[in-house]
Length: 510
Image 1 (cartoon, one colour):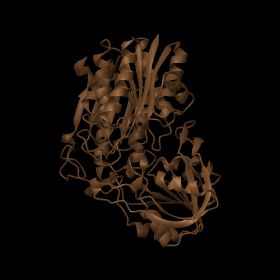
Image 2 (cartoon, one colour):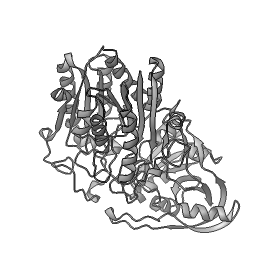
Image 3 (cartoon, one colour):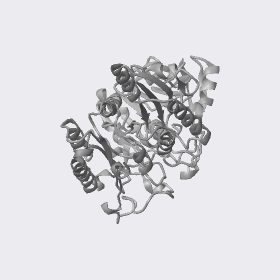
Image 4 (cartoon, rainbow, N blue to C red):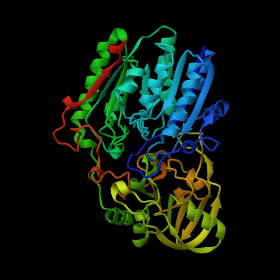
């Protein structure tokens, strides 16, 4: 028996001005781009990834593995057509050599020049180049956006049930169990899917809290009880201006119990739609949020600048929130990482112990939102210089090897500012501890994140303050020039209704 395995992950913010090249798909690898074959296996083995679960499945079934590619990029702007074609060609080539199943670890919100649903196009090509009925299992991020193309060509689909995403391996295992049952002729899966006309706010999506909490719990319980084979609720990625954005529900049902799957799909969709107003996040002015944080006596206080989060495509070089922190005189602060390769180069030239004046950040304009880069002039001491390498020890993507690129710590009074060559959302304390700084010992920790910070930082936080800084990850949808979303779409259109949903069942093309 032989499996083709591939990991391709990118969450595309179509409002980001930063294009995504093939070389950017290097996260978690030791290469200068995607890893292939044995290098791909080594990058994923033993990590909290769906691909690692696939490797364990193959081992348990005595199956050979052709690990086509491991390509994981930090969220950013449109993926170039050349990068996408290269990745697709690699996976399709492996599939053409023959296999018993294809197991994919994808994101689900990748947008390519010419392909608004890149994962759907990948699945279409795989179907066109493999025997009819070949099982294709797909693990997807909680923020996946769905078109019919993806659903109609997949055999089994499952998504993360957590945000922060700490169940990535488990998601791959869920896909693997269903694929194994199919291969052993114990199951005949059918996919049911519905996308609701809801553009939810990411700060209100997490299954750890309402309004999503008991919706996701119902889906997970239905899967555990054997009511259906798999059940997944996807919050969707709202910062992709594409026709298939929105909240989706996917159910994998046994063909002989299709009615149970349809009933669950209706129930989950109705529950989500009834709470649509609760999925909207109200923003607070930055100065007001920082002033509130200053009143909190006990730390650590986690300040979450969610408008410029590279985990959703932000540039992480907008300095507005740090500027307000300094203006209001907060002390004992650890902040970052801010991505600014040019400033890092200057600080490395000066060396540890040097007193410098530098213009940090503000190197990137964001024309989609009419934002102009505004550097922040800082005078401080170069406290530490590192290679930026660390291994994730927290619960999200545990074991993954990450790099910030060269990283400098600039101390301005009692504020330590981390400046790096590469963007990285701080979901693991390694972004700071690799440089000998323990954020748990600081009064304030300023992060550019949205929810993933909770994986590594919430356990020791006394307070969490969400700060609505500017950027292409803003929760204020009125700032975004959406052109390709379907309408009506809530909350942009108050007259949207459940009847505006789109649905698909693979039984119709069996």
